[in-house]
Length: 237
Ligand code: IPE
Ligand code: IPE
Ligand code: MG
Image 1: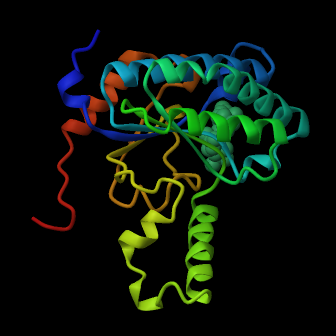
Image 2 (image 1 turned 90 degrees about the vertical axis):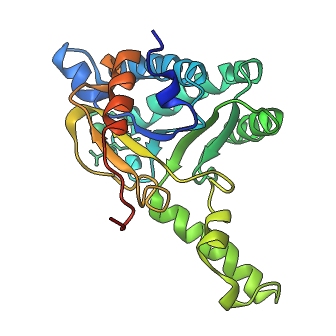
């Protein structure tokens, strides 16, 4: 079904993939089973975003706060991410430009090398931009941008007065991309949990009562439909 295609084309959306643990708990399964099913949904929704010609989609996969979880769970999530990296080369065929958002330095060296390689191989692709946020935090990203700018000022390459919103945005992980139109959070939660604080500044927030592992293409249709019924005023009338 692609009833939404004209309404979806060109949108920039963020998805906080949430509810994996609750999904598993409801079934008496270990939390990791929820992450596994969630990863399958993630791969299908990417394809659907391609079909809908979404301009960019950002998936929140692992936050800077998620290290606080038990070590075994963190390890399982990172292992799934590793599996995903092995498959991500397919996005070359699908014309996605893949960008990883977040601080990669604590990730295994092999992952870091694959991430750089995937980004390089897909950098000229013209389809949906696929951002994957791993060890990502909105505040961490803002600090990262501030440091980059501070270094340029110290080198004498930039005057503090030249720093404006556009330049700041160009120093974020999402440089060159447009701001989010909406943030979608399944699992019924109503918070951003440190997701894209800069890029979501005027995004519509859409909370949905479905757990991420149960999320379907129809749910994305519903979210897009809801977005298209919102009245966006950007401070005007
Ligand atoms: C989201 O699902 C996945 C990650 C944060 C990595 P959760 O694991 O947060 O699932 P709930 O919120 O406990 O149900
Ligand atoms: C946000 O979900 C992070 C990701 C989906 C990767 P969490 O489940 O970690 O957020 P909180 O703890 O409910 O705020
Ligand atoms: Mg959660």
